[in-house]
Amino acid sequence: GSSKAASLHWTGERAVSVLLLGLLPAAYLCPGPAVDYSLAAALTLHGHWGLGQVITDYVHGDVPIKVANMGLYILSGLTFAGLCHFNYHDVGICKAVAMLWSL
Image 1 (cartoon, rainbow, N blue to C red):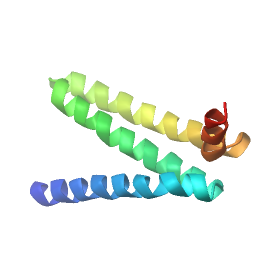
Image 2: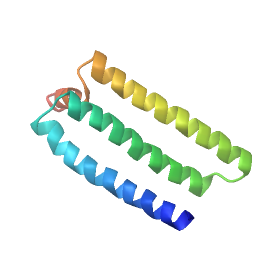
Image 3: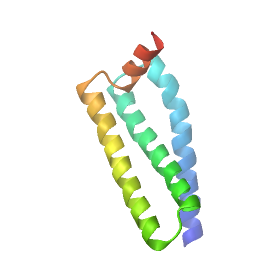
Image 4: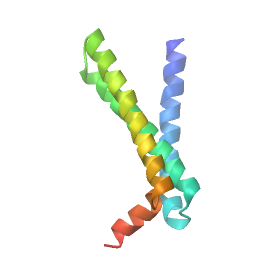
């Protein structure tokens, strides 16, 4: 039951981490919309799971946990929406990082 779900979650976290390792060179070598949106999804998911662990470790009590988790889902949704908006209406993540590096 729950140990299988935890194992799948752990495997998913590792898969996203490995995906991010591959997306970083891809962002440099072949920037474009596919990489931008993949980065938006992977970075949001990676951050969501990481902050979820912080909540698990440091937030106690039924109501505070529910409030923190709801806040996390709102934050993650807004983060993904913001990154997608940036990708669609501005230069995109890859180009923005390249512009920062060129300063």
